[in-house]
Amino acid sequence: MGAWALAAARYGASEVIGIDSSEKAVALARSNAELNSLSATFETGDVFERLRELERRKERFGCIILDPPAFVKSRAKVREALKGYKELNLRAMRILEPSGILVTCSCSHHIDQELFREMLIDAAWSAGRQARVLEMRSQSRDHPALLAARRRSTSSARSFKSIEARSSQRMQRRRAAPFAVTYDILLDSK
Image (cartoon, rainbow, N blue to C red; front, side):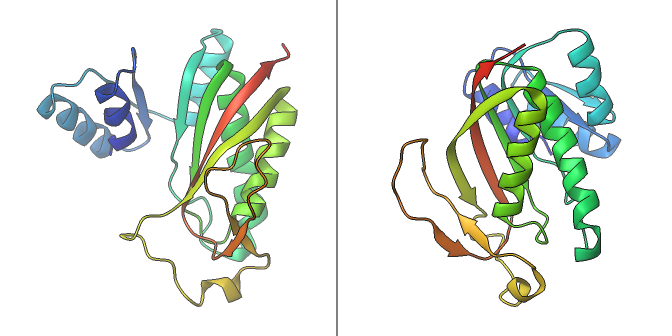
């Protein structure tokens, strides 16, 4: 726990706040920060409520990293999970500074990259923000994708690598798997 937060602290973030619902994970993250002599704050709590609170207090951040646990364990729960992902990303977009960076991840293998991208478009629209994709990544070799998992998915997955707003690179078909999307929030219409 805390790998994203500790990396941000290591590479120059002026303030790092990690939020997790697990007290054990937060204790582990604090211990890792101390072992590495890094300055980071870790809190136990409901990230949805914490993001609402930060919005009410009009807090703004230059970079937000969202890496929740899998929201869906079966295809029957995809719609419900997409609502959760949308709410999480919408809240983060609302507290992101203009031109801030949002890194958002999913490890729900029933939600492929195209579904996730569509959810992010909807979240940005609902938040009154415009965004562009800076990069899409897939999982590393230590998180192999199930070969048969694509059959269980109702839609195809796409992998994007280093694509910017005006890029003409072709998208390659890939299996739905854990991935991260980096968004550059262009405008704050509020």
